[in-house]
Amino acid sequence: MARPAAGAGRQAQVAGLLLTALLGACANQGEPPGGPPDKAAPRIVRVVPESGTVVAGFKGDAVIQFDEVIDEVAGGGGGGRGGGRALAGLARQIVLSPVAGAVKVSWHRSSIHVKPAEGWKPQRVYHLELLPGIVDLQRNVMKQGASVVFSTGPPLPHATLAGTTLLWVEQRVLAQAVIRAAPLPDTVAYATVADSGGDFHLTDIPSGRYLVWAIQDQNNNRELDRREAFDSATIAVDSAASLVLWPFVHDTAGPRVRSVEPVDSVAFTVTFSQPLDPHRPPDTARVRLYALPDTTPVAVRALFAPAEYDSLQARARAVVDSLQRLRDTTARDTARVRPAPPAAAARRAPAAARGAAPPASDTSKLRRLLAQRPVPFDRLVVQVAQPLAPGAKYLVRVRGATNLAGATADAQGVLAVPAPKPAARDTTRSP
Image (cartoon, helix red, strand yellow):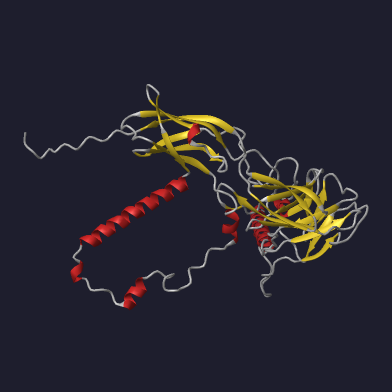
């Protein structure tokens, strides 16, 4: 009788395992089929406090309520400014200002709760901005953000500050730049994030004088860290104001010479460790060249920025090509060349000569803005008054090279002119 009991026990155990696996599989299944798939992005249905209201003595959390459950985002909530750590989870989608210190952001299934770590301050106008990117459980993404403005005492102001951020060295827009505008003499700033075109807007701020910063927030902590590009400007905001900010890396040490390379027999390029201020480029009085080893001075004739030198070279090549074509035309037997019909000559004539409208100039916003400042450069082309000796070495000294932040330094480097290669020996001839 013991064997059947043991067999029955094993059967019961196997049945239990199968039932557990079946129940687990059912629990991991998604929503039952039948309805249309959800393709709509989450939608805001309520905010607390409401935008445009005055809520004196406000103590609770600011709440953004959605019409469905939103994704908590990997990493969960996190702190805002103050701690230097990168923002994580939903904290990356929230900008609350003006606050000093961290911002507490928490997920509550279909809502986001926000509160400054320092608490809500009386007599302050707050901006709560929700950035695009909120995701629901079906991975539908909100492509539009939202902004809530409320006051804990004073009436709501209506001044506006707008602008554009451009990376000065890279000559392109700075998308997602962190913008901070502190009403002077205060240091607690209103904040926002520039859009993909580098544009930003701060509405409903008090009139006054502001110190405005644009930061290339590379580590996503919304603070200015070492080696991050930034720019700042002071501006008076009455009813509306706008400005362009040009972030760049602010080096406190002046430029050094990184390399010196020959260009041709009378020119060489000096490459610096950082871009030079195009408003204060070195002149011939600050660049010295000495033949080694006896340091005999060699006269420097001219200095060029790379773009300027390339333009001069292109024009020189065009002149040479034009003269060559003229010589070729003169050398031909023109007696047999029949004159071109008037229609053909007209087709070959420039468009302006035929009365056609010239091509429309590029009036794009980016080009117009970039034209406001000269382009920084980290190279100089030096032209000397006499040919450089093949195989020789020269000492190059630059006094007072100035970077974009105004830091200056004396720099030097060595130019090695390559020696001509020996002619290939003809091994086909017999001795």
